[in-house]
Length: 158
Image 1 (cartoon, helix red, strand yellow):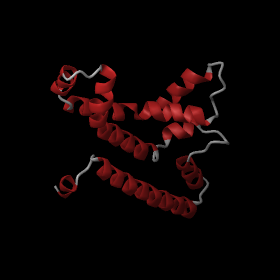
Image 2 (cartoon, rainbow, N blue to C red):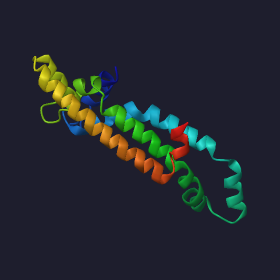
Image 3 (cartoon, rainbow, N blue to C red):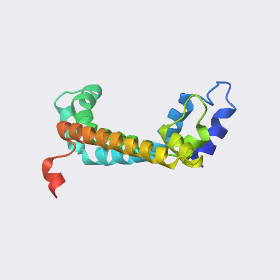
Image 4 (tube, one colour):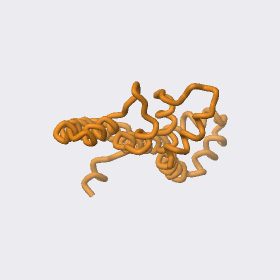
């Protein structure tokens, strides 16, 4: 449904967006926006209103309060949301099938095409390569999450 909606919205535009990577980027951003917003909203709710008030009492302006207090506390939630969105987007097929063109074929569409023409072993091999690469990227992102304070070693053990 999302792929058809993006097609309907962008095909009639005077900008030649269909068949480019730009339409895929827009579609995947729209697709992942609810997940990232949910993560960001939880991060915003976790920040106490008293921190903002104490910054203003101490003489901080809105921009300074945002840069020095609010943004550093919100960064872990933003990072987690986009990390989840990236890993979900990598395995997305329906949107890519509808919006693909010859010049910008996603890896999930390539696997689908291999399966469709009967090259099951090639599709399986490419799927394993993608799974290993995504596992590596997930592992790297988990390490970055630990580094910026999103995940602690105690929360993983529980």
